[in-house]
Image 1 (tube, helix red, strand yellow):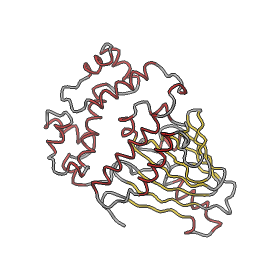
Image 2 (cartoon, rainbow, N blue to C red):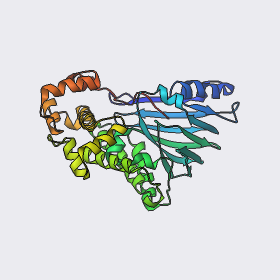
Image 3 (cartoon, helix red, strand yellow):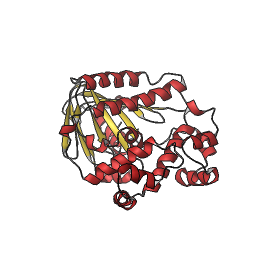
Image 4 (cartoon, rainbow, N blue to C red):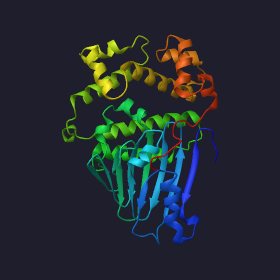
Length: 331
């Protein structure tokens, strides 16, 4: 099956001799494809299979294999050019997701979040099958600014909300190949919304307190994303909404390596870039889309868009590229 906006890939150790199965998996998958370290206690009898579909806003993978341990190491992170959140939904067997000194045991129906920008460990003590959803960090942070606090935590299928979300994620992922482009676009948004819904069901009392600055930055980012369509949005408005001085807000953002103004500009450009590749906006001109998301200087917009994405808005739209999912942190 071929589609312009999707890329299908299949990895299967049955393509090689049984004794070469783990070597194939480690070289073709762990080393070059997913940039991970992996180990197994059954190298001679190892088997594994990945079915992956990449779409503009997310990647959907069904993964099954024999016993293995998977490591995202700092040297793997250093090679990466994109940042993602991932959700593993256990379908068969059991596993453990560990990140930031937190450990999430998973049984069938459970799922957990982890980030490609920090080390993590995935342990599979026996044969298993999982659904893995990968989404650019920005897409989830738009909906859930505190997502980084939610990694390495079990969302249980025994929880009413967790069970509903788990079932919905699986059903939508199985139907993501719906042939209608507009429907696929809605389904991608729905999947990311469901991820955020499931994660938000975590008991807030279980989350450790972080620095006050981190909470302020999260609130400020959420405010920015909710007001990108306002052409007058600036750092003064954000500071006022946070109830603090502009100087203090600037100091907090500087601690994260980005100014408030730069964050607003980048968030607006990302939203416009998404719309340019969204079939729901195909009848809108580039100017209409830019103004919809708060741009009031179209000449300046073209320049900063090219600086950000390396091509003009029209070239970006015409290419109909798959988007940022050109690298997978875990299948």
